[in-house]
Length: 264
Image 1: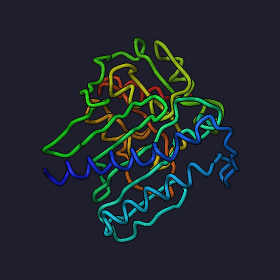
Image 2: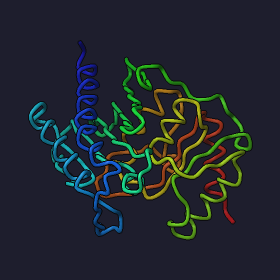
Image 3: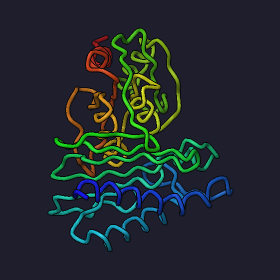
């Protein structure tokens, strides 16, 4: 077994471990607290990330970790695991089955492995995006993006509207109006749906690296394009938040970028 296959297997071990922690809390009336950034957090978020960090430390002691709940422990590490124990905590505490666990393996700043696990739906996207091995599956079955090339014919998914600054909000709404169909909700699973060809575009703003890096290999390995709203590569940063756009095809991505950056 190659090194990248071993790392992919380990990512699945992490997600299985995470399921065992989050699922018993789901729809249990779990209490949430509010963090400094006004986002909710529960004991399930914290226990899940702590358990994954322990497993990483035991298995790969030289690897760094960046996580949503316990921060950046990746100084001077070329190999880094990026963790979001519960992406969509609002979904989790309100009983929505859309919540996810997100995991990425990053080498020298480049996301090579990405995983989106939806415990309540029993669905898992797993991808590898390296030069000699590019693959993405949903529950073991290969994924490929749609062939949509026209924004006006596209189906678009965005997690939420109404919480960005005025310019960002206006751009997001402009893109939503330009798409053929638009749906709210989905969190990280929207990007899995783009990879699987169910949706054509996913767009969000104010995303941290633990939100977006696990998505990058999944979209790219399925044949799609993912970047920030300026078309720049998404990179590892434990402090910077950015806007994210994923599209099924390069033509569609360019049209979406042009719409987002249109001067009004």
